[in-house]
Length: 118
Image 1 (cartoon, rainbow, N blue to C red):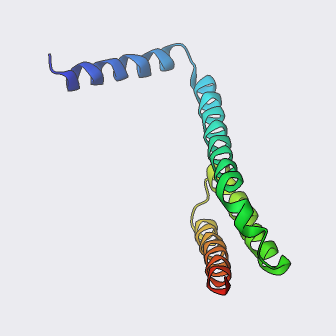
Image 2: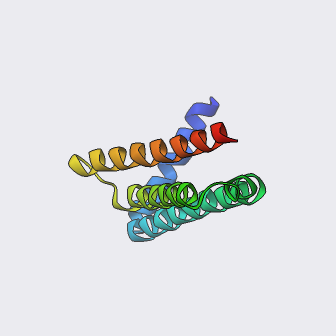
């Protein structure tokens, strides 16, 4: 038996077991917990990156530039959390992408302006 067919059979067996034992709610709960854990992992990595590299540079910026940069990052984190937990579609998905683009633009433009001043 090829590895592809063996893995497909294992996947089918797991799916059948979930349906027969009526574990859809448990599966949805596990999915939500994994989504939350992934979001927390992204936040921890971003914090470590900021702590090691960004904090020293941002302390040299003007208070307005630092405020704009941190506000853009905070709004971006809220926006990503909304995407992960609300699963927006249609107009709400468009709003997600527009807010994400504005956050990225504000953060990058502020960062580039401050780097050019130095």
